[in-house]
Amino acid sequence: MPAPTVLVLDYPIARTRRLLSALAAVGVEARLTATPLAARPADILVVPDGDDDDRALSRGVSAGVVDAIAGHVAKERPLLAIGLGLCFLLSGRTHPSMPMGADIFRAPVQRFDPRMADEGERPLLAPHVGASFVVGLDRQPTLSAMVKKGDAGVWLTFRHRLCAPARIHQADVAVGHHGVPFAAAIWRGATLAVQFLPEQSGPVGLEMLRAFFGAAGQPMAAQLSSQPKVVS
Image (cartoon, rainbow, N blue to C red; front, side):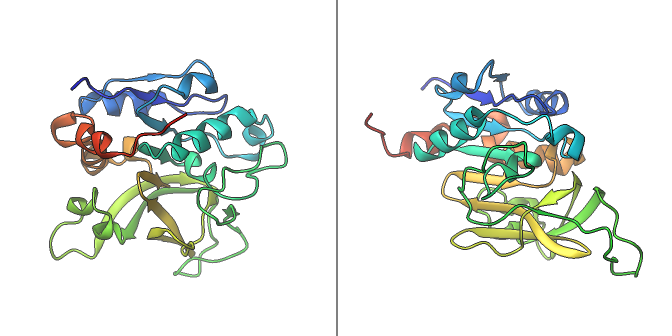
């Protein structure tokens, strides 16, 4: 069986260099899309992290980026969204200049409020940058091995101002905490969205990518072959 086509959905404020390096490190051959339409032949689509400060978001992205995500999910093909990419799968807008979200997960885009305090009564930093403890990934079938037996969760690296709520209707959620709980990962069916950055989370991040794309860097051919055929 030929290896599935893995495409990384490029957009103007995307951060792709480290992600592509991390994918290569685990043996996944992926390439950037030239346009949103170029994402159509993807067997596995990756929506990378991007800059989420207001200046970057004000540049906007085309509605075609969101359409490409929605179209891929509608085909029930595997999709991995990372960082800001997770927000494109939510409802509403990340910024007035951005298109409406794909509404894959019916939850609003939220942003950390710097007027809040963390557990130590220190002002809440926004963006949230650094390692945070994530619980609930042991319930995700593909990623459960990331949580060692007897551990409550796993430390992963984040860099974000925007986030999703910790409870999302008709989806499973792993939870992180930065003053308030938020969705560190959301999944349903073949769609997995993670707020943490596997490409910046060291060995455990590479382990996550290996798990998603298959053991020893082999893409998820078995899962793809079991996906329903879409009749156009």
